[in-house]
Length: 279
Image (tube, rainbow, N blue to C red; front, side):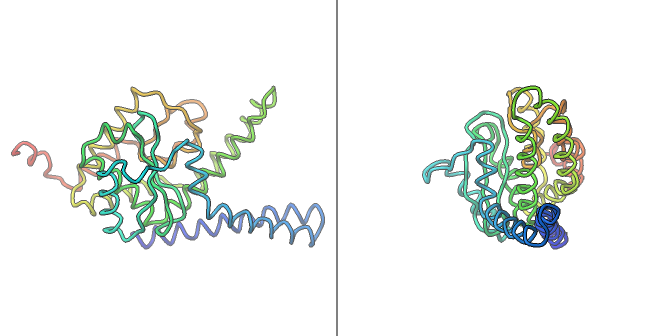
């Protein structure tokens, strides 16, 4: 399953690159023929290379994350190091979101270059087992290279949304046009199955599905009490959808229903209720 997910995400990454180059090349051809098309494709390749190397920084900048100092959050650091070694990925750079909304996400290129951001709310509210479940889920996205496609799609969709914020009477009209285009782009490349696969892989790595299942419930419940504002295009990044499913945010929902995710996790250990009563 991991190999299939990785191959699928590599294909999507190349599809994004070729589509971007083809789009600019086609525009250049219409404007000035072969020479302009060649120049457009060259510029597209430069832009794609720059985006590839700075994807995580762009995404982290979109949400206002700061890098953790060396002495901060020792439990988080030790847990991430242990899980990264178990999954065979390089330890990601760690960032902090300075608010109380419990959430986490990864951004970057893949197993050899990624960043992990967690919020103060996540560190304060979750138990060690729940935190471990969330971190394992996110690092599976890194191993499967979901992170590359997710980050690229979020950055490009975010750019489309920001293009509508020019002010005046044009803003609403552009949002009506560009919002659905950005949302369609997100749904075309990101399937809800990636979250279910990451849930299952995290449970297998931790040899228990309950830490993650409990974390999903806690994040969903706690998040409803804390105000959250960000670009709705960032929805695919998070472990649990932090947005109210209304307005433009409803168009960007890529997560499966939370109840379905929890049910699938619990089913991995069908005797969990008996074990809990016997404890």
